[in-house]
Image (cartoon, rainbow, N blue to C red; front, top):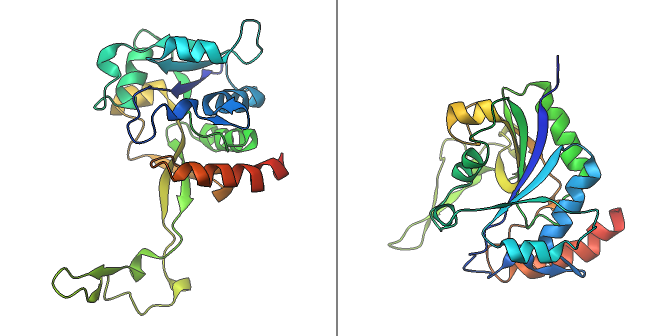
Length: 235
């Protein structure tokens, strides 16, 4: 039986508000999006690496003619380049005319710390049972059952889970959170659910030094610190 094609998609909208043009922030002489493209190419997993963007000229300028690291650029229509547009809508529109099932890895363009080995290992987890999606996750540093709520009236602390607050840490569950690194899915699965996410979802635990969510300008310092103190040593 023929294996499904495997595609990587990097959604790179240009309209970031809190960190303008963050997808093109230069880290160690390369824009973040270029680091991501090169990491994905290094895996040799993908038939095609797509960048879907409303900044076509900007993306083209990052990859020179004859460059070995040239993704296929997909212009994003204006209606899918607003603050309200979702990645689900972008992916479904991109593959609207694709008749055969395929595997899709959606990787956000600021994930310059991701290692190719992480993508390879998460792909292995995904193909074990492609009826499940796989997303990059991080472990919560603290147990949720130990959470305390701050009362508005007097600022006193109240346990959120009073029945479990006194339990030993080793007796409590581990929790993870999606960290905005990557998402594996199949096209048919995504069409059925209308989303990258569904009830059938697995997590792949990504090392902390490979994760840096760029929400605020101060996060750029964390990105730089992680890159120069840990990422470069491991490569």
